[in-house]
Image 1: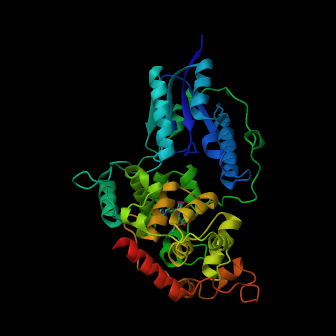
Image 2 (image 1 turned 90 degrees about the vertical axis):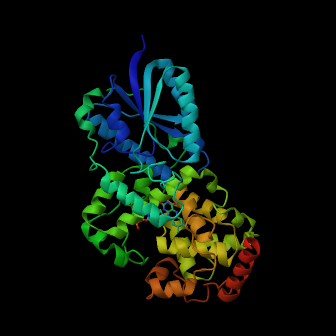
Image 3 (image 1 turned 120 degrees about the vertical axis):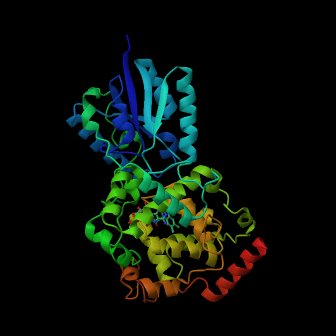
Length: 434
Ligand code: FAD
């Protein structure tokens, strides 16, 4: 007779502590077998030394070691999730599959297919809210419509949050006896899944009292370590959003707290408007006739535009997978507005490189910069890359770090002249929007 069990499927929630779905799965009637699937639908499109895959692999190994210390194991798989689950059904009498909810178009479609398949077999598929404080329709206007402007969303978010029961951490240790002790699959090395170790590492996050208290003063200066580095950790769930929100509140730093709400704002926008991954949120903006010059795009990607803040940002991204938020805005604006290259090209490049790449925030911010998105900057507000540099890297510390040849003959001349590029942009946008 096949062994009866429940499966807990780890995805973007790679931790045991305060993991809603994992903790809930242990409260069920049957032993829990935790699994992780290196999803070929996602990872096959990535370069072999992708830094995110290295990070996920390392984190999954740590999860396995931690589960081992509690008498369990993590079963690891490589393939298409539906196929893997079908295989598992051959060996086990699976009662239910439990996981935390995905809000992205691919994850939603995948989960729909899996839920349908499992329901035909009378197996439950239970998903939980873990990735955010508020999801889907939790924060909507009084008529039920989603918010498309940040400030009222943020205010409602805060009002609902204050009215909520205090957040409590989900402690898996109370029910840890329900963990199944054996693994059903061999441990997978990076080469087993066709990858190699990346030289780029995900830095640890920092949310010390000092950092949060100084956040407003330091967060805009790319030469200062003034931000939390939480991006990849929230993305892959190596930290709990509830824990971070509580910490932000206890330090009483509104600005830091509001950044975390921006993240949820864009996640709910993507949930309500999944087409914005490819279409402008404001349809008129899809009438813009982009220049899309491939050679210019290559110069931008190589950090050779002749505008030091743009070039330093892109080089930082290419070398480390990171780019400071202030610099992301300048780099993105330069692409869409000075070069008139479609924001989708830039979005795709960031998706390939950013350690903290998350489709909701990436698309949301790119559309914000291009002017086509929710609550976007008016199109005629065009960042001046030179004055941004004077304001935020006055002493040139950041640019000299990433552009060693700065101020030498080998550093290129600006590829476009700011004033004429600005005028060209205004004319192009105006022609499309009128
Ligand atoms: P901190 O300043 O310490 O902020 C803490 C957290 O708040 C961040 O980790 C993030 O989760 C959230 N946050 C802060 N600012 C934003 C914002 N504008 N939008 C959404 N969430 C925010 N962020 C991503 O997580 N993934 C992306 O793919 C991404 N792409 C971007 C593309 C462009 C063109 C721009 C302008 C911004 C993008 N951002 C993205 C937002 C922001 O740049 C990063 O979240 C931030 O730089 C990450 O560094 P940190 O963790 O040290 O941030």
